[in-house]
Length: 364
Image 1 (tube, one colour):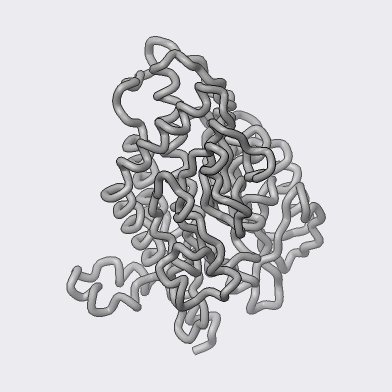
Image 2: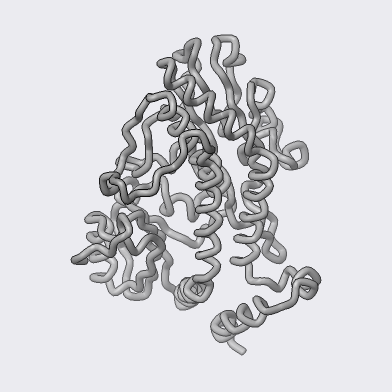
């Protein structure tokens, strides 16, 4: 059997494995589709965070709201994937503008707050200046589970817990990934993005709620329809983090329902490589799928990046395949790149929402 033929029968194999009993699955866990292993591990880790860290996340929200209300600056280097501000691109819908990204040690002052994940070696304890520190682990930093075994001496000095007033464990592994391919030296399947972004937005949701309860209102970026009496309102006294968590789990379950499409895209990527073509990952902003899918621990080096920031040119051909990551279905920049991809004759797949504000947009 040719290698390519073997790849093409994977959907049938996956369908058969999904129907295995629990006992059979546990005995033959390695036979489960890697995509399902990845999603299962993500959900299990999120559930662990939910069961052990919920009170700490809520306390963090109160500290963030208090700092903002009192005129302090909230700084963040929280790990949201490949960087500390990856999910805060220009015009990010849902951003209340509470955080300043980075941590300028020489400029921070009493009354500020530091949400710390990705850190180097700090010059001094931020608390000496009256800064409230909320810490959490990040890959390749000293607070991860296997840090002592896996990290260099330089990376072992990347510590934040000893300076933290409040600690939130995201259970991110030292490598930042947790899917092991047979014979691999390092794991694939980066997970810090999911764990970091979920906890980050849980904290922000309740911080905004707490501020609203104190009649401190923040402007949320976005173009959602105006609120009216038909829109369900939330309680200002009930934590919103749980709502956000449930929505994340619901959407992960929806991804599982798209397994057939995921397999089709994976097959196309493999077939493209075996036929001598290239696989590109596109996102409007560099700090999104363009960088998150590769050039990071746990990513796939076979991907090439295209974005409107750092990798603007597309030199693909009809032998190539493009996977687009989009935030809305009718973005003009995305549509312009789609036109380029199609003009080159490349095959295109998209990951992203089909609707905007709950509606299918007219036009392209």
